[in-house]
Image 1 (cartoon, rainbow, N blue to C red):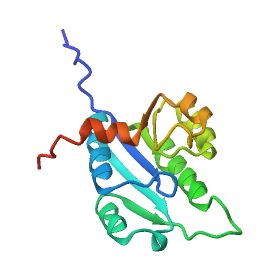
Image 2: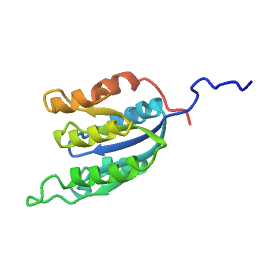
Image 3: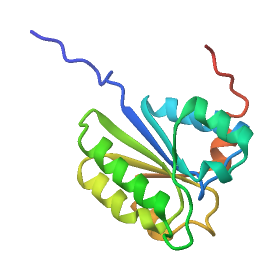
Length: 163
């Protein structure tokens, strides 16, 4: 008789970060990574912004942890980073059955369709945003889980990463 394993499989997690919508401090970045590792095995980390316009120290720190996708801003072409993030997420997550959880850092309603699509394909979606006032309410309702970055920082700030 074959013994069934007791759900010891680790969830594979992808992080997609709309940096221009959810900026973070060094401490918040550290806490976010602990939060993500608490959710499973992080296999993909991508952050989208016009990195030439961002704080160099934070951009360098983020580049150590994430694949930072540079999307130069343009007044003529709004939401370029959002569109690129959505396209990459569809390519990398929907085609990869091993990724079961997506952490999306944004409060932007432009991502509601993506969240719907991910959930329709059996992916768990966790939204992380700054504040309730700046976060699209539909996005909050669509998410399987919703967290404020400040809540994550409070939960993980006293923990240390053990290498």
